[in-house]
Image 1 (cartoon, rainbow, N blue to C red):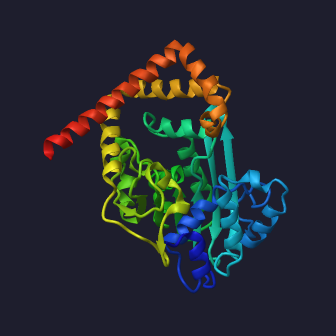
Image 2 (cartoon, rainbow, N blue to C red):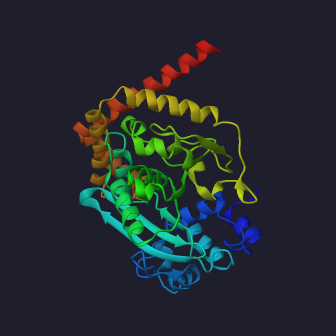
Length: 361
């Protein structure tokens, strides 16, 4: 079973001028966007450095291991920088915005391929509670700050560049890529060659009727693993392709687990039964909540997490922090009531879907 590292060994000697960008390349660019290139990659769309230079400067930092989402991101950068395909790709316009008070977590970086087409890679959700809360806000907001920042990023890049554009992203980054392409000006949209959404969530019903969104459906390439949860959230009109992963359940969201064959993914006919069940249950559950109830539920979870002095998702699931968090949960009657009520509602939705399935058997 091959992965991105195997692909780089197999195809790394062929430049982008010799072989155009393929789906695996877009996943690599999406994943590299999780790396903190602050102070290394220029923060404007004009000046640029090669990926090889950026990699050397990144690893020259004594604290580089603290500037990646997961350890494999650093390994991927190192591997890519040691290939003819990626080493001379130029990088520019690194932008990162984190504002807890505005519930905003956004980052993106652009790649110039052989001085012709460009790849704008949008970062997915990081480990911060702010980033995850912004994700959940999608369930009741017509747009979130990161989406509006993605649109601004695309506008700013296109103002200085007339190259054909490929927009890519993993997780929330995939959602941002689609949003920016759908909401940008027609003059920019006509210059977008493709949009690659790697297991990113969908949108609200209003987005499904947006003219810009409908006009780019044939340019959107959406990939979700067979047990996808994140990529199945909310609504979407674009067709999605199901791919295989070495992991199980929600852990299939990890792009390093996706199985490859040459310059493409290994496909399967449909998502797993468990993924389909979860998707139907979540849709049923959300349909039973109005926007205010969704907002209250997200706020209650966030307030509970913050009351335990957590800043990162990893702080919540750390075993030593669980007793303190449970103590806060027991004492916080208001938030406890909201959370329990919504979880009971989800359990009922799951039960209803299971019952419907049994009737059909």
